[in-house]
Amino acid sequence: MTSALAFPHDSIALTERWSAHNYHSLPSVVLVHGEGVWLLDVDGRRYLDFLAGYSALNFGHRHPDLVAAAKAQLDRLTLTGRAFHTDQFGPFCHELAELTGTEMVLPANSGAEAVESAVKVARKWAYKVKGVPDDAADIVVASENFHGRTTTIVSFSTDPVARDGFGPFTPGFTVVPYGDIDALRSAITENTAAVLLEPIQGEAGVVVPPKGYLAEVRQLCDATNTLLIADEIQSGLGRTGATLALDHEGVRADLYTLGKALGGGIMPVSAVVGRADVLGVLKPGEHGSTFGGNPLACAIGRAVVRLLATGQYQERSRELGAYLHSKLGEVDGIAEVSGRGLWASVQIADGGPTARQASEALAKRGVLCKDYHTALRVAPPLVITREEIDFGVNAIAEVLG
Image (cartoon, rainbow, N blue to C red):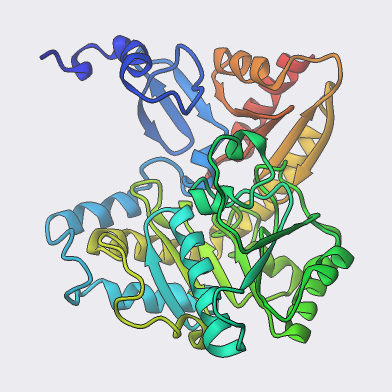
């Protein structure tokens, strides 16, 4: 059998033939190498990464500290399962809790798994602590949310593409408009276990909520003995200019879901972090993950925590994010720019190309960016420079001009 790796130009055809069609990748770009903010394709063409793996690559491609941590651990131990203690697990939990100012860590693999775990914990807490009757717990979520694509999570999605055709749906969720505190207040009952929100909505268009909204949510949760769960899988770990996006509002959640950047772009690593009295409701056998908290993941996660502990990447995102938003604001053909830090949604003005057309045209100019709805998602690695931002924004200006 011929290996696809021997004929990299055949990769797209092989993908179309043998892979499920659940992604609509950019045509004619087959990537083989990455370093920092730059990627190379099979023809040796260079591209600026303006997406960063949906924030999984906050530290760029193959950051030397992260690669070194992974290689060192690969030579020692990669997996045992949680049936046994390892030398990396406890330190990872301790260091991640200290970074995020939390008390306990529940490791997992994917972001969706972290959200599913948080849902389970919130329900268990509601029954054991709050006194909600069995099987009656409700979780309030926001419209236009994106928390993953498992069957339970799409049960409370309002995106028809993610939801349609995948029922019957899991009950126990109430959807309210994002940013509407009165709607949230009306939705909370004595059976409400938690409010689950993205501090900044990603797939909805990098939407920053109204000023004061998240603080009001916190106050409402306190008044009703309801947990606040912040989904920081995309927004967390430096992306918005703070360790956690919720930090901008001076608000603390009871639970946070983390993922993407926690694995350094090397492997999937996620976690639920938060209050010990909430995560402490779990007992042995009630929840688990064979690969969750494996030694390799923990070694990489610890290296990620060390990078963030310096504050350097949060500062870069704040400063360079302001520069990015300023430069995008000068481009003709952009109707609106939203977001925070090195994370922006670029709404294309009427009469311009579709977002898909724009992303394909950008690829021809050496910039890889992702279209969604009628906008472009711009989220480069936090190691980007001003000159590299200029390169990407100038390409956008050419495409939309």
